[in-house]
Image 1: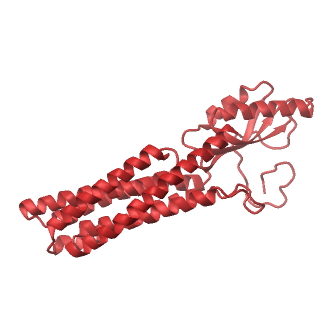
Image 2 (image 1 turned 120 degrees about the vertical axis):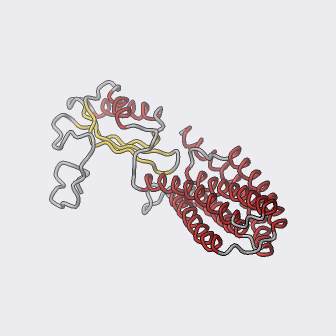
Length: 319
């Protein structure tokens, strides 16, 4: 239960951080869009576009935390916690799309570099950089930007934006000092590549969770070894480990025990297995006890042979 309490505590902290960050970003986004239009800078406009996506990303992540707190129902037995992973997936996808748009725009500007009001561009970029540094620092200090993928998706949007501001400043300085108008699209492309890298990371992590992949920091062999340490467990098969949402992992497996044990004795073994797995950061555990006479395979991983309606004899998972 302490894990559940910890989970909800970090959620409330993350929500507060997102709320404040959203307000700061949204206010400055308007300033940057106006500045970008007045100065005709792509670096500024791409930065403003990314600021807009930041505000949307923060808003989406905030909404995801809100939905994720809803209790389970008969139609959604695990609750709505996966909404956070969907939000992270969407944030990763928008980061990739923003990167593609910036590169597309920059290609046209390499061929025909337009006139740019560099002083205005520099002023707005510096203010943008300061805003992004504050928001990134605030999010990193107050929120769980390492473990929580929903929070990390929002944080990476802000970091990408911070890089956008650095790029716009560098471009403005180069144009003012040397008159290199190609510096504006070049800075945009460099930033776009960095944004794409962040987006790909979030997309990959969230897709892995949605594909019911095992958590990156939990290894099947280690888990089996932990289960087998429990007195009375003879073997383990049909093992499934997956992530429900960031920091909330689940496991189901079959264990073979002495067939002559009473229900109470078998129950005690299950309780000890659950206790061992709590130390491995697995909070939702379902264990099925069986005797050596069980009528299905001993494979550690279940093959799950599809929709064979005649196969409902021995194996509860062969739907």
